[in-house]
Length: 118
Image 1 (cartoon, rainbow, N blue to C red):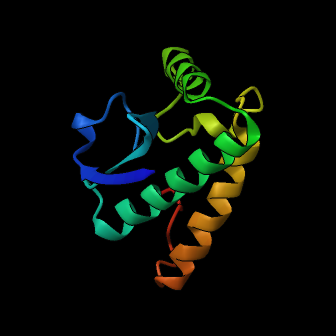
Image 2 (cartoon, rainbow, N blue to C red):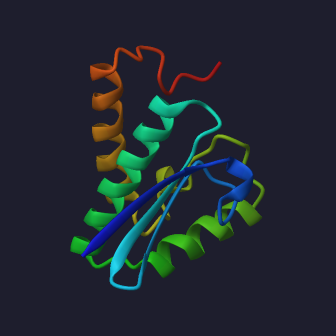
């Protein structure tokens, strides 16, 4: 299995998001927005990797995740609100577990303000 990770500008993501994952051609593809620096892009990519793997193990498809994310965006939620935090999200448990790993790694990188709203 091939796993690819790309850092790219937010405006080049498949839809308005800081991180994205999808399965294609026998592998996992991860994209993370680079606009806020390499450390933050790394943390988002790590989150996406964990989330994708847990979804795969838990039987939650990429199509379900993407469909929910797009419907969440269409509902007009405020910027910065995470679709995966919504209780209706089919991948909420996987998202929350990925957040734990992401924030733990942020602490290892001494990014003590990571995730705080400014």
